[in-house]
Length: 206
Length: 206
Image (cartoon, rainbow over all chains, first blue to last red; front, side, top):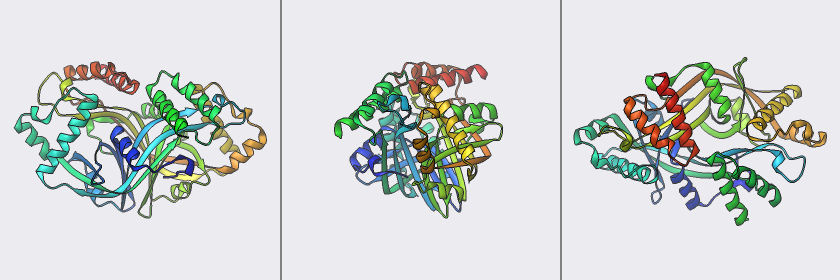
């Protein structure tokens, strides 16, 4: 990932937080010169430094994932256009602010049913806690669960490289940054507001 | 991209609309077994079937982009977790709804200053119209513009393949779909509300 120094984020705990927060990741694999890209919900094992996931067995991507010459998983935070009009000085140029995490690593299949179930349970638990209403895997009839388990392939990605980029106008004056925050905060789109909140944190930190 | 039939979107005009709407795309390139992924604002030339963009000359990605064995640009719409609790029937399983477009193609550098300027102007115009306040390139001092132009590399991607996926619960009953729309619409996150709006359109269409 192209990351000028002022935008680089290296704090592993923060990057892990972001992965958990923006957990619907984009897996890109390259195998024998062919790219495949698909999005999947991911689970992070912070202690082992692993991403865990699953996909439909019908989805051939699991094969190119475990055979990949290279693979990257992207976890994207909010992004938004920044107009030069929002700066205090003239002669600024348009840009796009965003926050993202990229994981590189090596994938392998999860072969035991116990671990596969654990991944499903934890994924549901996390997502239900954040977005749902407390549904658990135990609510499924055993026969339905068995069919689902057979239709899925589970995998882990051992994280070899973890990169973070927070392009939040750190290369601009404080006055310019505050101007951008004000404009983004006032947008009706909550993504722009989240971007403004991340910029505000970054201004405080700097 | 893994796209079961019920989620496949093939209407080129609609996919072009989505690209223009979610224009901050993710370019993944694969060259000699090595992946590189970065996000850029893109401009679509609908008539020529080309994506146009630029990146910092310091960002080596332009080299692997024009030399790529394979490349994909992803334009992501809203996405959101769907809880089985939102369905009318028991024994549903958790999933993630989302809308995305993938472009495959071949990149080449834009070599004339006239065309590079045209890309910059159109990009600014589009983004200012949607997110900004009418700033135009003409507001830059010529010397500033000249420095910027030298610091950028412009490229086009000739679109060879265009794929769309709208995973919007089309595989569920109408009652289930309406239930999901209600829950997503009620979320404070505007991304969830946009996802609900796309689902509503899809229910009408079906």
